[in-house]
Length: 135
Image 1 (tube, rainbow, N blue to C red):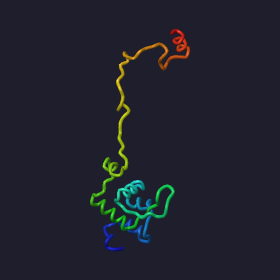
Image 2 (image 1 turned 90 degrees about the vertical axis):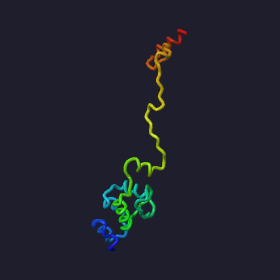
Image 3 (image 1 turned 180 degrees about the vertical axis):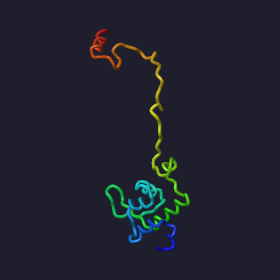
């Protein structure tokens, strides 16, 4: 290996010893993260992989030793941010607003609600008939 990769951990260098590119799951395991997290880093531009062919669900990607080395250096320098709200804001393409169910609720004064016989949810059919006939 070149002197450019002396600061890269030995297991990563060994994995790339006989292969130029490694698939996403292998690189994620070597970097100590989930495949989902690696994809988020790729989407954020922290690590750059190569698209390999086409996929029905998602495009398969492969990574070189140079890609992994650049990512490790960024991580050591503390220039990566994929935690908490800053991660969600930086990677999200939509503006998601959160509310609770009482956001547009109104307070009802039950004394002001008219109480007519046969107009409530707990009224049986017989009671409704009686109230209609009484009019």
